[in-house]
Image 1 (cartoon, one colour):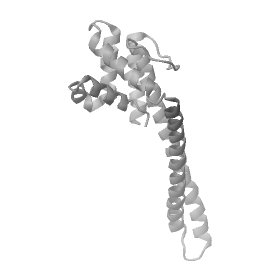
Image 2 (spheres, helix red, strand yellow):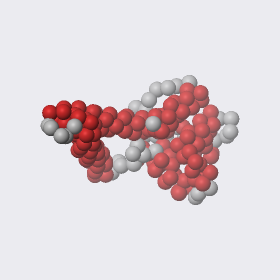
Image 3 (spheres, helix red, strand yellow):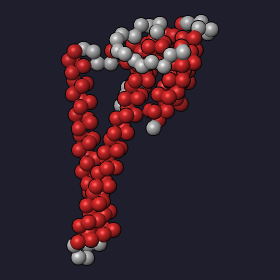
Image 4 (cartoon, helix red, strand yellow):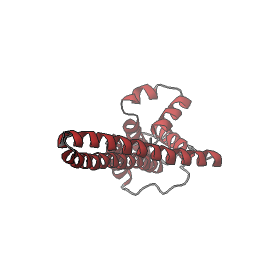
Length: 184
C-alpha cells in the first residue's frame, strides 16, 4: 500500500506544480525535466503496487479455494472435521499457490532484467530520473516550480532517509535516489 500512497502523493505534486497528471510515456529524461522524472517515479511505484496487489489477490484466492476444498473433504472423511479440513486445506493450497506465484513473478522480473542488461539499458532511465530530480532540486532557483516539485518528490521517495541522503556526496545521493526509484 505504501507504493500506492507514494504514487498518489507524486501525482498531487505533479498536478500542483505542472497542472499535469499524464503518465510517463517512456524515453530519456533530460537533466532539467523534473516533470518527466516525477512521471517516471510514479510509473515505478504504480507498477510495484499493482504487482503486489495481484500477488496478494492470488494468494488469498488460493487460501479460499484450499479452505473450501479442505472443509468439503473434512466433512466427508470421518473424524477429519470441517473446520480442521478447511484450515489445513487453506494453508496448504495458499502456501503452494503463494510459492508458485512468487517464483513466476521473480522469473518474469529476472528475465526482463537480463534482457535489459544484455541491451545495456538496465537502470538507464532510473539513473536519469534520479539525476534530474537532484539537479532540479539543487541547481534551479527556489521560485522555479521544477525546484519545488523536485524537492517534494525527493522527500516522498526518500521518506525518513531524506536528511541522511541529502548529506551524502553527489554520487552517493544519485545512487540512493536511483535505488529508491526501483519498482521492487
